[in-house]
Length: 139
Image (cartoon, rainbow, N blue to C red; front, side, top):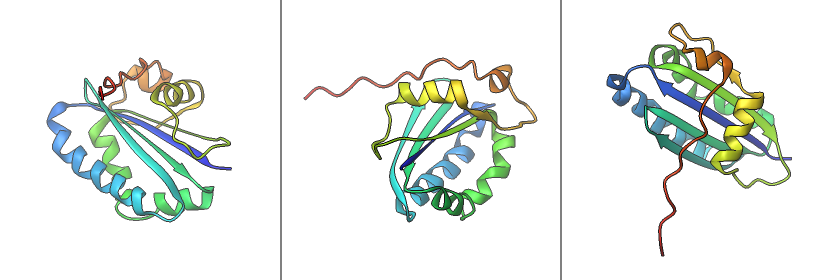
């Protein structure tokens, strides 16, 4: 059964955007080509909030991805870069990536917050607003 993994990160200071973005792009590129990955998407919101969602064939592949570079090296800088870092995963019948509202509902209900030095109150309570998605393009 496919496993969906969602991460929501918020930068603690906008001046850290370049450093964060360098890490984020590298991790997304790794996920896209990693064995067992079934899909990747990312969403940038206002106020330096960043979401990503991935679908995986099995947990051992998720663990291998998390321990692979450059992902492994990004875990430490999260404490420096973010005041909110929350993660959730769940199994679902389909390998289709969930919409952002579904991802948010799982994150708020079941998520795990990273222990951060400069954590916001919302990091502990997961009282995050629903993501604001860009309007669909008109064809």
